[in-house]
Image: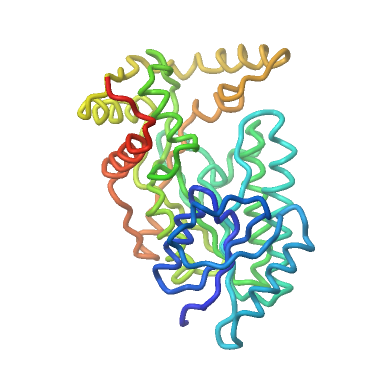
Length: 346
């Protein structure tokens, strides 16, 4: 099938969304970015795109936006949707927004696409919607869902949103990608860059959590989105990860890179034993009755206490996806943070 001229992208102004728009533009697609009136579109500088106004929590606005994209399409080249927008957070106060944006917003976006006669739609999910690793084995797209009772709203809403998207398979050619923890240039406000900055500033301390993450570069993730759109199967999920790193190993790699550029960072010396981690979670949860911290919440501690180990074998085999080695991605991320003046030489 020839590529369509028009693709509507939600979350276009965010860290991954910008990379998706650039990837699609570079491959000849005509990108329509869904934005709100106050959205900062400067991050899309250099990308050929048009904007359509809409809000995931306003179904009528989404229908108008989707119809506008459909009217710009031809009968032989109907439009596609890339639904990338999501609300990320690990505070109790984030739960209501995540339900509205991640779950109800996904249902709104896919309904609008169907009503406007879009033929294909891709949902950007997450490895957390696949489940966590048990016994050292990596999860795959076929792994049974084992996080149904995991008490973190972000995890639950991403899973529910994925199910909402796949429910449209009989009416739309739906595909799903499940990226790991995304690193790369331009993500200075994201959780992965915040981790690197905290490490450089000595804010992590000598002890780190027992869990780990499957990592991937932002540009590789965007390319995986495009390949899944072009080559993926209807109803299929594609995990996008490079390798798994426990938190301590990630910190040691990052510190070695920082020291090579004159930043006097110190790597944590110990990982908390896994059996003791619930004690730390319980202590923070007790404190949250009086004041919930901005970052180190009990929900965040739960996330970093387990292994989000996932295999990208299907994406490599079916899509021909080949991620950049993470060491290079890590170097590019640090280069970007240094260029922005966020990493300070000692």
